[in-house]
Length: 242
Image 1 (cartoon, rainbow, N blue to C red):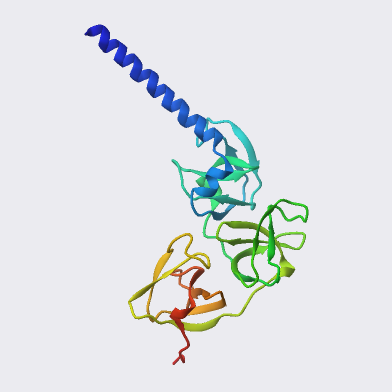
Image 2: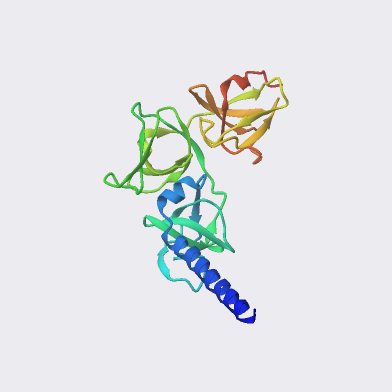
């Protein structure tokens, strides 16, 4: 029995080492495909000082690069003990949360190209194409960078677009009208990602534009309760402001 107990103990130690090794191997080999299906992505920015990118979420992990201060990064916003996973040079990397800026200011811009606005990985014409934002779509615009490109986000399409291909529409004041107390709102003009939050009936909003039965709205006045959401246009009504 004593010998059996020793064998069982040895196997437990061996298996724990195996699973620890498997966890680390997975962390090292997570692909962009894994990143793409893990959920919504977020646009963040490196703080004024540069950020060190680690292979794993640990100070003792191998450094795989650095990012200049003020550069944008893409994250899934899931932190591990103070570390944030990001896309870095086509792979996963981790940066310390205290090196990242959250809640970035943005303006609302609209795609004005009939064929759609092409989104690039870098502000260069020959850079990899991330995706295309259809004509009329409203997006977050984090500002013009260089070479005549602006950094934008629509859902999980994040990157650089020609500034000349987008405009900043003026909002119109409307109200939410529905037979129930609350309605669902979405981050894109689709229910693909699921409801982002509920909006109360009677809410006064800014409407920046409508496409395919969806309207892009912001809270009025902007108090942070709503931050760039789409709702189905049937819930919006005109109402004279007193």
